[in-house]
Image (cartoon, rainbow, N blue to C red; front, top):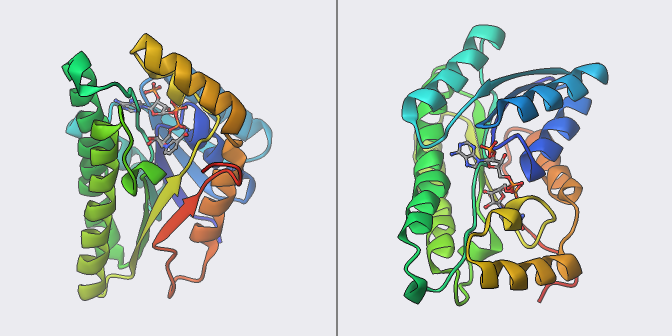
Length: 244
Ligand code: NDP
């Protein structure tokens, strides 16, 4: 069945790859991220393969921008079947380095951005009594390592927010499904945006040796969306087979 699927952070990595796979399977894609030229290119790629995609430059730290993305989906396609809260960043560093700007950006994008997505999409899903959230967490939501304290806190927060949402929607009998995706190392632009040079270097080495293709994550998301609606994959933990 063709669904209307909104993806934040659709301009690269897991978001881009998932958008392209879901479009190939006949779904209508609504793409959001800050880099509009990348979104345009991805929408053109999807259309050249016979798929359907629209986009809007979106900053998930700005509630009005996120609401505009939701409105674009509703105005164009009349409904939102799936909202994927995917935008995120991982500028690891030890606390002693005092990179407060990075901490704030992670809280704003990884946590506040997810809440804004829920705020933008939930009312119309409630009205329709159907819908699905796909919220990107991480294996870092389950275990913390040095340098990853703030990132893990935001991703553990995504887990908690998602489970509370799941319980509330189950109680309301709204048929709204909540799926958390917790990947291990995936080859995307994530490490490029690490700002602390020493941390970036060691992460690059680790990712070069370990990371899997975002195709793998996209395939698991397709499976979660295509599952019959009376069942939900509540969390998918998917990591490279060789990741310890
Ligand atoms: P990428 O860096 O390739 O993608 C991140 C996306 O987030 C980009 O499209 C970027 O677009 C978007 N983004 C960043 N800030 C904002 C913002 N303020 N508003 C809107 N969009 C924003 O990394 P991944 O594909 O790896 O990351 C996707 C998700 O997967 C993240 O939540 C990440 O934490 C999670 N994840 C990734 C793992 C990995 O190893 N790669 C492992 C576990 C989880 P733009 O710059 O155009 O705004």
